[in-house]
Length: 544
Image 1 (cartoon, rainbow, N blue to C red):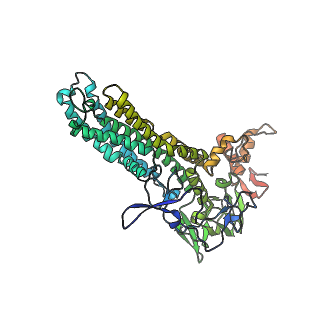
Image 2 (cartoon, helix red, strand yellow):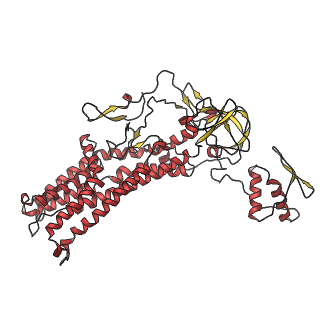
Image 3 (spheres, rainbow, N blue to C red):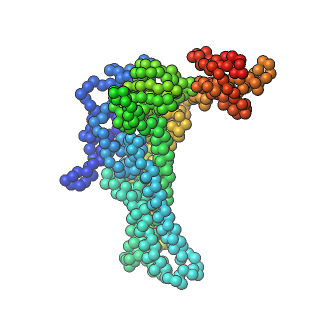
């Protein structure tokens, strides 16, 4: 079975009782036990080779990781705050109430979630603004609106305007609050649901059955003080927070999907000497693929026919293409040079190095930093304590507060529930990790997990390779030194000669000449000598 710190949970439906039930994840996902455990290097040295024993990679020295092969091929969902929660359908986390996200980055649909929240936010604002404005009517002397309709009738307008906010735009908060109480995993939505729910029900009863309330709850006109505006404003602000959270999710998901775009969508399959264009998803292990000049390599494998130079900058950061011949490994997403070759597919789909990098970034965005354990521990006791303090607040104000004591007690009790909402405590750490990992991926910095990100705070010395890491990785000409002081002619000759070369240094010279508006002239008898340079004839002069 899968081993991890914490409890793996799958939420499912009992078909007979139609109730949500919790099961250990082992019931749904198990590791294949029909063969010995395999280990591999996370950087996939030696062509993604697997080892039979744990230890360190003999090439790069990294600790070998166990290879997990899962029987379950369905899309699984997990919670960004609680990665131990895994279920086979979308929904909300039973612990914190957050929306679950797909474990596979390619299945993420954060844009759809974000657009849905934008739609709900617009509706919430449209109805909340007039509810708040109507609540201010009695506070403005000689208000002309009171001449149109009595204050008690305006209450009915407030009620109608509140319904779309409560039962459509923000209904999900009450569902999450209910689930948190049923499972006794109290969280921020528990406080929000209780606080706004009590305010809404109090206002509803006070509007239709004012006679059951004591005089302390009523105004001079005999009407009960209603709190529809508090309900809508608070729910709308919480919805705004969810919208900002969804936007952060969407940006992180986009950064991960940009990594996925490094791989091509199609490949050229070689069958009986004939070429056939197929989808990258149809490639199988053992297929022979033709890679043409300038194409991206579709999957990991080995060259079986031909040779070329391959730009592996996306993996190594090195700007100089690497020469490859028969038997050499090639990596998905890297770019072929100016020659065609045939390769055999060895790692496809989620097994390729590129997919493993994407998976690592995706997993890192959901991993917990050590400080998150402290936040989780505090949040576990925080909500019950807040509820108790809210009850104490009501009792104290009701017995010792100024008149109307019951009204003040009720208002302050609700205020304690709302303002104590642990949004920052629960969301700040996981959102920081998620955004940080996503931004790092956009900049080419791959962060393996949240613990590594947090430990960067303790780093005093950072050792990195220069080329392509702290530099752009693109050679460029800074200055020309000519012995005869004729820099213009020298630049024209060497740029004209190098315009026929594919070498990165040659391209740097040509680009420099173009920036200086140097005119390139025709070259005859051009020849590129591997490892030495170029030769050609310009204006009847042989130049090397």
